[in-house]
Length: 101
Image: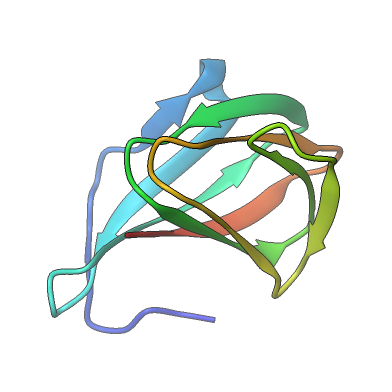
């Protein structure tokens, strides 16, 4: 439930008029992740790199590359390859970790 010995970007990444806010975390081995929250909304993310999205708390209703929507809850994750997209619907705040690559 935590990352130890990391660097955290002081400036937040703010997307979709504040409906998605995250901070970039860099691990000791140089691996980058983002940790954030998506507020109630429906958002589309177009990806330039592979992403693994891990739900830390809440329920994310997700459609990957136009497939049927599926619910992901605390502790679950989904993967989207580079060049793909996902649409996420959050009825309540969804806390997440994005693992790149």
